[in-house]
Length: 395
Image (cartoon, rainbow, N blue to C red):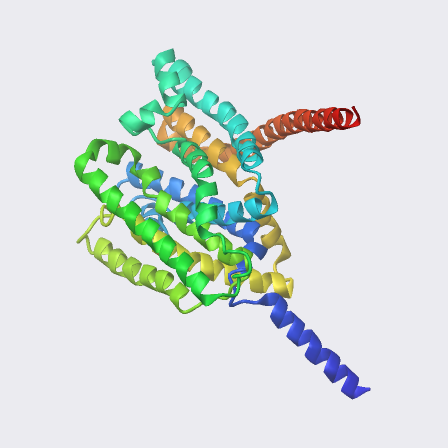
């Protein structure tokens, strides 16, 4: 009897170890919603710290925390969000490789929300609060003012739509050939392709910064995130194939931590500012990979042990509505700062958060309604086509 219990216990331990697979990239898939939640919370805090650093004098209330967060964490939430987006798209393409449906599904999830949030932003900023014109509102809504003037409020929408458009090409470049999922040579070839694409992109960014500095300054917030998305697209195949994390994989996070430490110390001493190596975004990219690994490992262990359910559930909830939270919070933040100023905005921050929650619900409900409407019409079209094909076959 005791022997049977020991055998069963040993089997359970082996299954748990195999199921946990802490040294595998697949853990990113298991805790992906929680990671999106962490990324979005990080973005909201980063924007708050930005406002404090711009409006509060050195040594003022909240300044030290904002400065410390900006140096140690900074915009890492955006980088994590971009990498996870690339990983998620890999799963979507493996599930359904129809490119037309891929584009359609992605766009109907983001365009309705942008029409609502972007419309509220430009109408409020230019026609209600400000003294702008319809022309100014349209320029911002269609991202013309982003390219020409560096107006960045909803830059991420344009960026992610552009990434959706190029992703199928990246998927073909990084997808393992049939029957070669276990080939080391195949993994090495894909790593070389990814490294080559990313290096070429940074070279092009450097040339652009030198030859067209104004355009680069206006759009670098998006352009410098393209290589990060490419890395996420490359990583997606490793996550999907449940590959182990190799020693070579650790080079990026280790380099990121070392460079971040050097840059943080220099900035704390006042030796450098963040405009170092593509406005510091290359360092944040490498550093963010380390953050993803640490967060994924911790969250996966909590999941395996079924600990901290409330926290994990909260993070999943934030992750589920992450895109809507991003769009609504930057719009409401921009309008409140323009209307009532920083001091009142901070004193009514609780009102800001409640407004964001309400706006997220409204935007998600409207977006889901559009998805159901478009999806329903598409299903009807498919059925009609099938019926027509059947009748033609009978004739």
